[in-house]
Length: 112
Length: 112
Image (tube, rainbow over all chains, first blue to last red; front, top):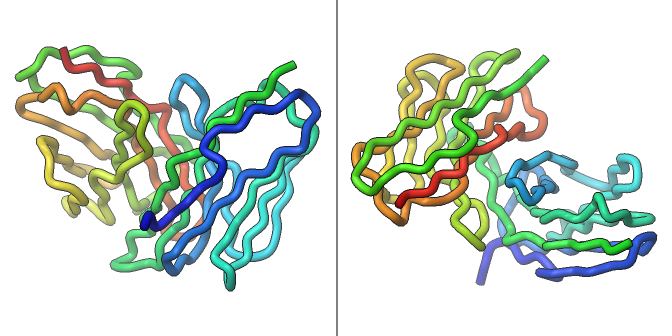
């Protein structure tokens, strides 16, 4: 069983739709990151969460530590949101490394 | 401000040739530094991490090596590239004071 499971793997939506991407993990974590990777490969960190909920513009991220589950929501989706979204739990710090464990990503395509 | 520089952006190298990818960070000191690789159609995989000058830990056995000659410089190398070394290489850092990951823009390596 993978340590990080993301769903769905692929997602298509019409512009304006509400998007939800889910992430479940099995390891103990100190934080969880949501990352966005565009077709060129560059990665941008969207959120780092250790509890509760964070909002940035049209993006909302939530985490339930007890259930080991996080969600990323996009309200009023737009074609420019098309990208791969990656869930990356940050392992409990061992030897001060703060290593990330990556999900396989959700490929989102938003059509006009 | 805190930034990370990674170069080159793209590289095409013949099998058996050497490799040197460089990553430098600015605006921070004593960061944890990471090299990740993303093979075509796959998720990110941690290759090396460093918690200080001269301190390198390898996550997976491979044809690559890493060095950290200065606090804010992280180098990925190979003496002889293999076809399987092709992929997208990302450098990243995280501050010891906490906060999110910052990723470099990546190097797309094609071994021919």
